[in-house]
Image (cartoon, rainbow, N blue to C red):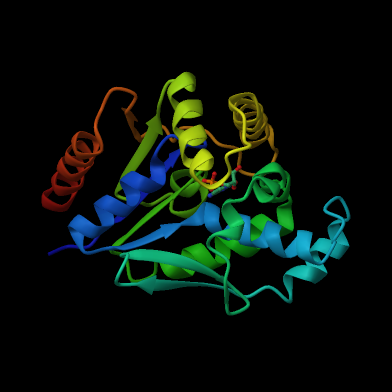
Length: 226
Ligand code: DC
């Protein structure tokens, strides 16, 4: 069967990764969470106390960053490896979330991540989620989905996820972080978040995971059989 590239973009905490992971599983495709790569780079810069506003320092630091994904069959999840170390848990911390949009706006960081993402798509049969996948990484993707959800639903979902790990987190903190990230992601000069013209919008505020998966799967099969 023909293998396609599926690009899934949208704002933070819209459920993009949940959809992308489930769709990849159903189609036996590779799933790549491109945000995890920006998060791992951010973690490296924090760990090494790199000044993120210093372009040259950041560009030099990137020479020491090696990113890879490792698939764990037991959980059916890809985990992010930073220089061979599994950082999947750390990259989801608030400390990384607070800085990641600023880091993802740095041109050398984007160039570094996008080149690796494009390499991963060479064999096709991939579902990648992020902010610029349909516009910059794979403008030739056969299926582009732009996921949206109402702001209150996004805050609630993200709060629940973070509260599991950290009982001190407040809903106000989560809301402020999401608003800040939306602002930076849509206003940066380098490949800002925007809906690609030809992408299909999927508002999942009132859809179950299964319902949204079925819609996306139907779209994918239409493209494959076209
Ligand atoms: O999807 P996420 O919340 O894990 O992404 C973390 C940050 O990385 C987000 O604030 C925007 C940035 N990002 C990006 O600029 N481009 C991508 N393709 C993916 C994520």
